[in-house]
Length: 281
Image (cartoon, rainbow, N blue to C red):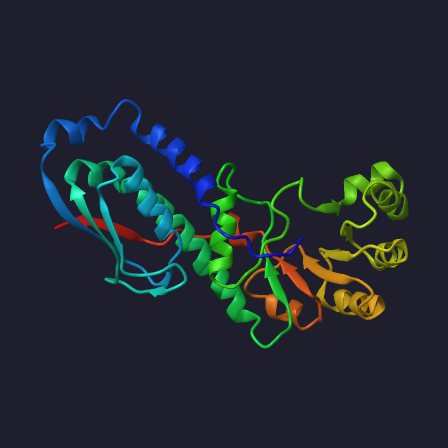
């Protein structure tokens, strides 16, 4: 359930195709009226911010989908630290193609680099502790594969991709089933060997989840002190995940509790886009 997903370029192509259709529609009216279709140029994509780069292969794909003859030369790789005035890539070819693809390519670069940059800050706050920072499903609809990729660029990990590839019994499931044990038994009846995670919010629920044989116990919205007690009680009989209300200011305290994973929704839902620009020379 916890992994680092590779970038599926076939899935990315579908996102890029849909995004180009959304942005261009029947054509780039302004560019097509002003720019001669035979005019060529060199353009550079340049950072105006400090952070971690993510999304360069996606930006390249935007231009290639518009015109396969475009030359996109990556000067920085995903995962590299970028600073103001660093050249991320050079784009050579049709001026029309460069201008038409400019905004979409930058949107991907800015958004994904923002996620990678924030992810690195969380990783840096937990250095020295044997804990993995993991993301959540709190992603932009339709862009999950890209945002979960950006998280891994800086050394964070992916929780389940969607509802289909991992079992996580949450509070509403527990309420409807009657209790944790009943919920786990219903799942085990159909999936004997599949990993099961159970969300808990107090020590009594932790005890019940442990008794039920849960593989991962989520310690949701608990204080670091309560999580320490829970981790001691679990005693490595299940993996542990701290979740809820965790930010850059307090993640160090959660890392000290001894949990195996810390999930942070902010990695994807609160990342500030990096400032990156494209300039025709």
